[in-house]
Amino acid sequence: MDTLGLVEARSIAAGVELADAMVKAADVELLRASTICSGRFLIHVGGDRAAVGTAVALARESGRALAGSFVLSGVSPQVLDVLKRSTSPEPGEALGVVECRTVAAGIAAADAAAKRASVTLARLVTGQGINGKSYFVISGEVAAVEEAVAAARSVLDAQLVEAVVIPRPSVAVIQTLISVGR
Image 1 (spheres, helix red, strand yellow):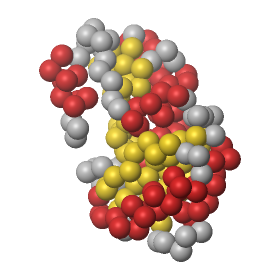
Image 2 (cartoon, rainbow, N blue to C red):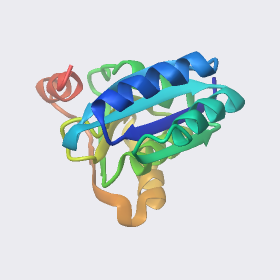
Image 3 (cartoon, rainbow, N blue to C red):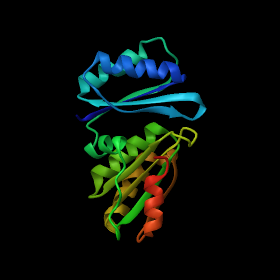
Image 4 (tube, one colour):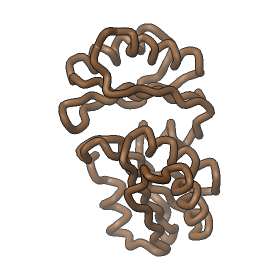
C-alpha cells in the first residue's frame, strides 16, 4: 500500500454512503472516515495506485457534492499508519508541530517531512474540529525534527500557519498532545 486517497463530501450522510461504495468498488483499506467541521465527511483510503484511483474516481463521478478529493502516490508508510492510530514519542525526543491551512497541504507536508529525515510521524489531524485545517506532530532527535520541519515548510509555503520545534517537551505536553481527540 503506497497510495492515499482522500474525499471530502459536503454531506455527512452522502460521505458515509460514498465510503461504503468506495471500499466495495476497489480493493482499498478504509483508513479513516469521520465528520469534520461544517457538516462535512472526510474519507481516507489506502491501497495500490489503481485501486485508490478507482475508489476516488467513483466518488468524483457519483454526483454527490464534494469539497475536494485527491490521490497521492508514493506516500510514506508512516502517513498511512498514523491515519489509523497515533503513536507516543519516547521521553527525551524533540517534537515538531506543523499547522497547515488545508487537509491536503497537511498530508503533503507530513509526507515530505517523514521522507526527509529520520523522524516518527506521531499524529496527523485532518480537519476534525479545527475548521478544515490540519496539523501533524513528529518526533525524533532535535536535528532530524528541525530538518523534517524545514521540509514541511518548503512544501507548504503560503499554506503554513505555524511550525515549531520543541527540543525537550514535558511528558505532560506529550501525553496531552497525542491523546487529544481520541
